[in-house]
Length: 285
Image 1 (cartoon, rainbow, N blue to C red):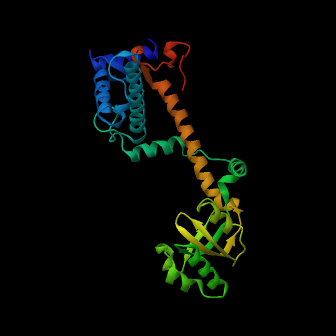
Image 2: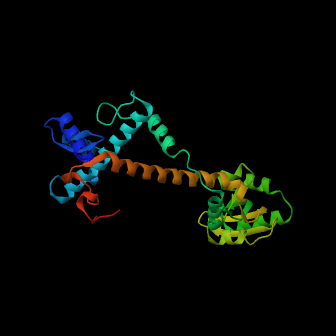
Image 3: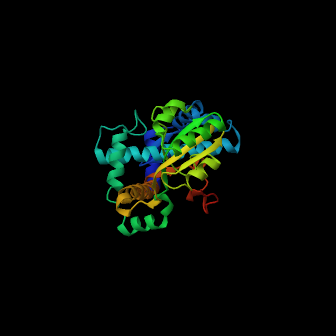
């Protein structure tokens, strides 16, 4: 008797006459469990995206849910094998805890590492991710009309303190109490002419009057931080963490697929269209 036949015979013995959709490690997944899960999905947020019962589309939904059930059962059995009895399996009672799943992932993929060459290559291939744009520190005064704005500009040119004028006349409640302090400004954060003027001005220069939809601005550039690129040592740790997460997820997926081939037998009626049971796969993701 082949291994497949033995597992099917074991499943039939355990499941009696109850129809099943698949066996995992010899344990049957009954059709009743599929029906219960489908009803649960239809009641949940995913339900609105499902086709109604009947027709070829609903058959594919059932196949998709069978894939979920098979995966859950594989994970549950592997956790029990690794941790011993005590964690629930996927067919009886609550499923495995998040902590148990995390231990399984760590056992399977915890030794995966990312070579230094890949980390540095990612940094070199993605300079835009680590570019820090030019930053201009700005104070401004916002008033309602051009005449008042010109008067403010004259007072500033004459040496009057911007803090005092802002607190006295600015209509920008957010910056008025801070003496007109607008903060650090980057390209794309302000509108049209005002931004263009600020980013072409020298440090200390009075900018304006300049009109926007908010009113008339008079501003001063107080400091400029030039565009820079974050140095590799500063961002290396974050790059490694991202690449490591992807690599470990890939390793775990490969392991899971291998365990699926070793443990799972899906009944033809419920098999995914790309399952080898159908011969040459006609469907790929």
